[in-house]
Length: 213
Image 1: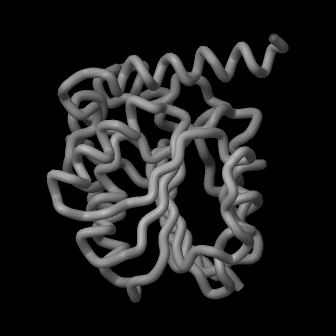
Image 2: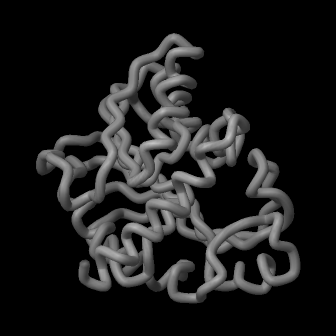
């Protein structure tokens, strides 16, 4: 086993452990920013990377979107499918790394990256792969912790989020990863989170909505 495989196994085990509990790690309700932004768009086909237990994907399906999602955690998928059944909606949920999955170029009308904190060494690579799967004029909806968040999570672990600066985001990184987009909104903002067990308290996030040119 090489180093990348070993680290991937550790990463997968971490998320399987978190999602194996009865309670939903980040709750069953959708992320508020996603909820606000998704309802502004015409319904179509949407992808949720790193979707975990499915709260956002299920919400989009309830609105009438054709929903695809993926995560490395099988436990996350199990919870997501239970939630979808409970809410009487259908979602297509795959388990695996992005490069292993068979998404098509320009398959999606929207991609929602909600706290999709991929490992630092692949996060920009993944953003560029995802860009290829988005249709022209398609929309990215993004909310994740900013580099300033390190001070917040150090002060209050209950707010959650990565504790290494390279896994966090800056406005400049988003501009670099998504250069061919009309920026509808891009800001760094302090917000109060109340999402399940692991997002509770004040934190700093990057919010981005962009339309692909």
